[in-house]
Length: 170
Image (tube, rainbow, N blue to C red; front, side):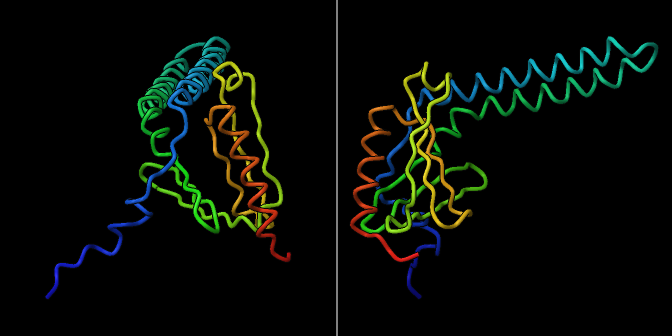
């Protein structure tokens, strides 16, 4: 019997050099999380204020549970950002994200219809951008968040050039 590696030992391309997004993107994730906590807190606070009598305890328990869940979510922000990566291969871009439920998507260059760089106010303040890929399939809609603006624009231009050379019939 040979000492074969497990079937998923190299999945998904664990030996390849994954390009990572900026660690600053974790701060954007944390800020969005904080805003969500404040909004939920305000809504539950309003409900508690409007309700009178003994009914105030249940919304407070709900608020506590939501705040705890959002704080746990915030603790994983930096790990989630480290799990986002991509590889430019010969015929496609391989995109990965997720901690417990890892998602790996291969986007063939010839199927790219649109490569878009977007920046909201928060990402703009951090000097970051999101690269969006649109293909003929709705299932492969990939967003690569947290790239430095210069990197996002350079990657967009490179992907558009690669898509033009590998255009396949739709």
